Length: 359
Image 1 (cartoon, rainbow, N blue to C red):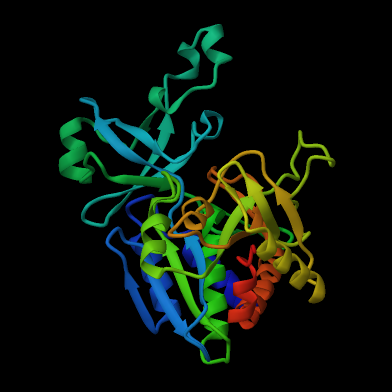
Image 2: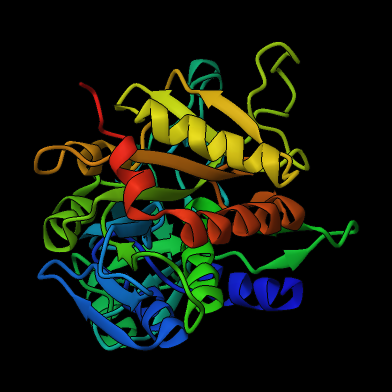
């Protein structure tokens, strides 16, 4: 399972999946799960695996998109101006390679740059550059050249150019887009493992679009699925980096998946979250409990859908998300997968009903 996980993560992270152009990821998702798969009308993919009962309807959800950019305009001298799709910090962008996906499917490599360093005054040197002051150099000679020879047009999407790499410690993996291809891979592998095996529910795997620009795909997909309970799988921020004290850490590599109780956008269903924590303890699965003070996930629209959906977030800790290169520990991923499979095997009607028995 470890080798299969690494192969799947490589293919997923190297796919182009900026918000609104998740087709490559969607193809992998549907092909790997197989069976009964469909999409909603914004492009989220929904795959259903029926167990020994039609209910409860258990949704394993992940978003397929990654932070990226869109071509905003093309200058007369052939440089590409861009606008962010998702949250970026200017410090991480300059001198980084990117890939533009054209309408015809070609991949055009480029380099993010700005006003040359030797022309910056002292104040400018100390200021974090913003994307508005940057452009992408693709090697074109003019705006006409960009259109005719490169085929790049306004609205084309852009993602980091970064290859999947096993580090010197082979359990540490470096790639772009672990937020959220780690979660996407978890949904795929969990449904693969549970397909054809008895489970007391109907499992619905969802690969949602456009999370990074406002959790849009999860909103429409949840209306289609109408789940009784939802498990959101994420590539969650790891805190074990310079500048963060040990007292502040709620997610560190090698210490297991994060089970999130709340963040500014969603407070998880407490009985569900505590049930998941108890299950992890029962199975001896290392895990970390998190209350995040920033950020958010697809749990926001899911838990407020209809009359409300009991929801919890399980995340694989990832250092340096929303950059060209993030790092995860494959052992955290495999422990998250073990926990997710156990959840699918045990969420029966009585258990799920108990999550919303308030009176």
